[in-house]
Image 1 (cartoon, rainbow, N blue to C red):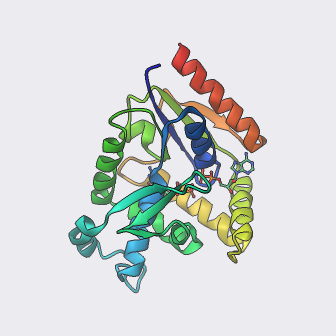
Image 2: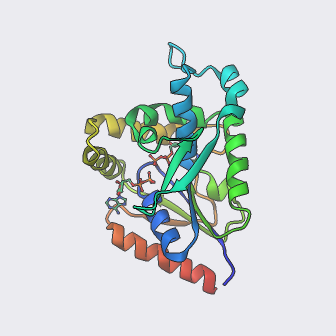
Amino acid sequence: MNKIIIAIDGFSSCGKSTMAKDLAKEIGYIYIDSGAMYRAVTLYCIEHGLFLADGSIDEDKLKQQMSNIHISFRLDTESGRPRTFLNGTDVENQIRTLEVSSHVSPVAALGFVREALVRQQQELGKEKGIVMDGRDIGTAVFPDAELKIFVTASAEIRAQRRYDELKAKGQEASFEDILHNVEERDRIDQTREVSPLRKADDAILLDNSNMTIAEQKEWLMNQYLQATHA
Ligand SMILES: Nc1ncnc2c1ncn2[C@@H]1O[C@H](COP(=O)(O)OP(=O)(O)O)[C@@H](O)[C@H]1O
Ligand SMILES: Nc1ccn([C@@H]2O[C@H](COP(=O)(O)OP(=O)(O)O)[C@@H](O)[C@H]2O)c(=O)n1
């Protein structure tokens, strides 16, 4: 069967990567978490003092240093899930903290950052057989993707899911802070000038507010089967 490209976009913390990862594993496709790439660049900025005292980004320095930022993914053989590496170091846990979440959307709004990452993402999808999730996969990275999904759920439900996840990992964070972060990122992601978050006209909308992980997994598998047998 011919391999296709599956683009999964949507609002923050709604379950995109959970469903994308599960599908990729089941059908033997590569899974790429494009958000992890923006998070890795953000971690680099934090670690290299590129956030100025007023909270803004030293754009000139970041532009100069973009070629020093190398992001890769390696499969964790135990969990079967990919882990994110920044310049050879496993940063999978560090990029998921609320600190990185609080800084990532302004970094992702920078045109030169998007250009560099989109180029890498397109390269990764060249052979097809890929599931990629993010904000602009169906609109900018792979506008010709054969299957596009746009996921949403209420902000409270999304914040609760992220809160439960951080708590399970032993990370302290308040529900209010997470809700604020989810809403703020949605606002910045939807209003930025370059490739803002929006549903592609040909994407299928999924509101998974009242769906379990198993139900959404089955829903996505059905979409894949329909797309490949059409
Ligand atoms: N339908 C669901 N019901 C409950 N929790 C979910 C559901 N889908 C995903 N989750 C959980 O919500 C959290 C955020 O999911 P994730 O896949 O990381 O979202 P995204 O990639 O959209 O940010 C994870 O802890 C995940 O296990
Ligand atoms: N394709 C993408 C993916 C992420 N992003 C940015 O990166 C941030 C983190 O993405 P993510 O997918 O890890 O976010 P969560 O939904 O997992 O919280 C988003 O809030 C966007 O600002 C983007 O601009 N374009």
